[in-house]
Image (cartoon, rainbow, N blue to C red; front, side, top):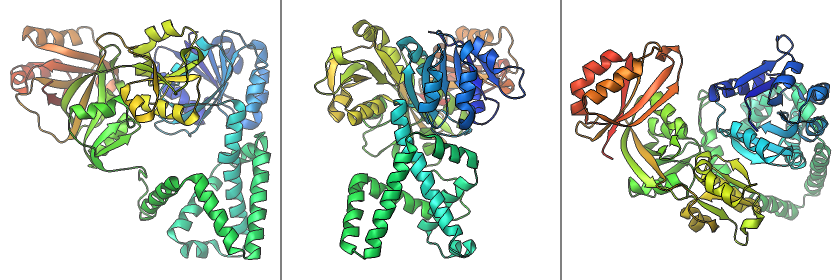
Length: 554
């Protein structure tokens, strides 16, 4: 099932509008329509026309808006909602003829949303439709749940959390104490708690009230909150110090001492900030090398091809690797650059252009083995879903579908993260794609070896800050652009290279705004900087602008 058109009902503002912008940039060949109270496009137009219909309206009207569209639904389209509760909207969508999958983005309308966590709840959707939907969501960190599981988890994460803040706020209001005085005498940890509470009251109260009253799982967890409050009050009133300490220790055991220690360290860092510091990455770490992904990933293994160190810091997104190096928190970064079968890693190209003070200093091609991995005791006949990074799935897809024609493919942020989730969930019906390091590091078994095409390699690069070009290095990496998009622009540059016997081992384009003639062109040329200097003036005359991204030997 192909998704050629996306319609977002209620997509003129908030998160619906942010998703619309994201998909327009990510999939410029697909039509994205939005409807709202003042748009020419109606809800009916969207349902009649679009392959993917997303309901992005306030929670209290979601079910009604869905049911108003039922008559126009089709079996060859997908319906999804992005509300904070799932059972009610999913039940309403199941009254349609469409394929149905509930969605919950665990973020707001941020400037950059790629890589953020995103829950999906398959309800009535075939393998082809689900694969197409997940491909649309491949930029996000996907988490699968049933609608019931979702509402249970949100009954704690949202309902109980919000109730705790409401109780705290009401207690302060009724205390008879001046809030300014409370703030002035508060310790840093209590101030942090007050700020977390206060941010809720700066937002739309209707959203929080709807979550509290419409989540079907909410009442059982708010009842447990009340029960816990009553029990603890009884213990405090009794002055039973021993029982209170025992209760404290039991909670620490549930959270795990490791988490509590990490939380303490993170909060200490947060509380050491002055009130004037408003933009801080609380997860920022320092080390010799910044690595994209997690431990045991292909990038983690590739580090050994560049340098001998265990002083590694892992980052979930490529841009964060660049940020760590740019800020001097890490001496260098290792990221994937291109795969022999699936082409360039676009996030790396975008970051190379964005971070002007970072340069490529080394390049290594590493053979990539992609195996089908599962939990010990699982067998091939049990496997229903396979998860991994989109590149790993693409490299393995042909052989994988020969083995398991009906398997459902699930994109994840990284191969290692998919494997870690498999171990945590202990799901014998799920497998992951990955290398030998995941077998050794996480105790997985190999169900099928070598799903990758012959000669499958990934080229990784090392990046450093403010590095001078090496005049006699064998390769130069460049990005260039033109003033306007005109026929013959690129051909003239390629002809110049050919006339001087310069071989290009890489050529990619990325769409950009009008400031760059619509496109950026990335090339790796087999030429030293000293030799490139012979044609640099002629090259500069053909392009509107260019930048050397680095020099390397292999």
